[in-house]
Image (cartoon, rainbow, N blue to C red; front, side):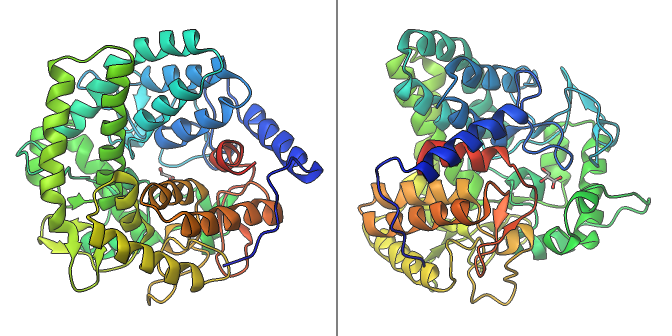
Length: 432
Ligand code: DGY
């Protein structure tokens, strides 16, 4: 935990960082959508794009809404918004559109990503300097957003258990989180050879291992072989996870969707249905609470086992508003102790875990958009001081290292891609 003496007033350093953040988004703009960073990620990613819109919102509202419009232009007929939209060709990324083999309506992957877009849209509607324009845009996008949420509830929880399933670590957005290790062991490896491109852009010590990629790619092939058929994949996928991160982000976004439906006067039987499904989730969430560890975990659906490794995804339960009063107290205590366990916070895997690796992608590094969501959840639960500590550390990190993809909790060093869109966007939205 660090002590920041950053004040609320706009210092020259703050102005400078803000200008750099704007420049980062402008440089990453490919004409209406923003790449997370050039080279490493040359397409439009679902949750990156949503978070990035919060940054655009600070200086170009029209461009912010355009980001979401282009994201929804890739929505599948069944409502899914894919995790990557391959708008233009690029050979700097693997696996590209040929490996995924999907194009309905445009070339894309065949899985989704954490659906934070609904929550972003609500913030954009509430914070707009041009409310008339924002209302017009939100009204146009609202039914697409409803289709997307219905897709999660109906296709990813067809038995109405209350807990949606995810089929791929890439879908969680937290690709190589140790929470997926055991479940991935049950997935076969691909037998064809391939050339990774990510490790040409970033030190391989900061990226997932080949043993993970072999299985990531097996699943990509599996979806293609099953012709992207929801029913067949639900029945046969060798990897099925109740990911607490996605479940929490979906729940929060559904709440925000319902608030927007009132603001826009667009309530109907579909929004009522979403409200009903949310009640089922609220009832079911206790299945992911571990009474022994006082923590929310993901669950491997195929073994029915909770994955008892403390990752930051469990703290998103506060952001979702799932936790009871006693659970909130425990989660705040855990957060304080987590903050003290490394120089900077909040490590994506608890530093005391044996699988903690401070610079390997989702196995330890700090991600600022996750910090923002966790701090928001803590603040709304009444833990302002803990939230402030996370915010101060986040600020310190961008001051020290700039807009990196993720940060080493021990040293504060920037890791992964640099000049990263969502880090710059979160800086503008939350830190500067
Ligand atoms: C990657 O390629 O590392 C991305 O995180 C997949 O979404």
